Length: 202
Image (cartoon, rainbow, N blue to C red; front, side, top):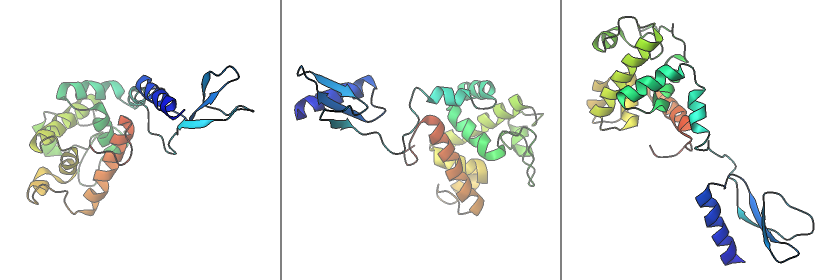
């Protein structure tokens, strides 16, 4: 029975069927039966255990991203700048909660909260235009990803605190309270949209 259930488990994993508790039993004819429920009168051996906090499946992940606000604009900006759409959504959610008219006390504006100097540098003339703001924010984030060797954590920290704040500390997340809250918030959103567990490496 053990060798059989091991083989069945391997088959289920390969076919992507392992999304819930799965049990194996022997019916009256001696055949092995797979089920995700107990049936009376049979002895079951559980071969797959559904985790308590299942992450989003790969099948669900594209639908989750497509369901976010400004999904088409984000997808276009992500493609143009070779960035994950989930990362742009995570930044937008944390920066403005998808409010295209958001303005911070420090002067950051729009969906990706571009500062005036950054907006000018990225060629954004109307920061409250969603398409222009997302494209400009994506270009800036791509620059930071390149600067920090595709280290998402450092790029996100630099997006919040400025690249010099990260570089001057030897490429670590600055100790500012806002940045210390900001980075986990973005990364948690990113992991969720990617269908990753909360502690998955990036």
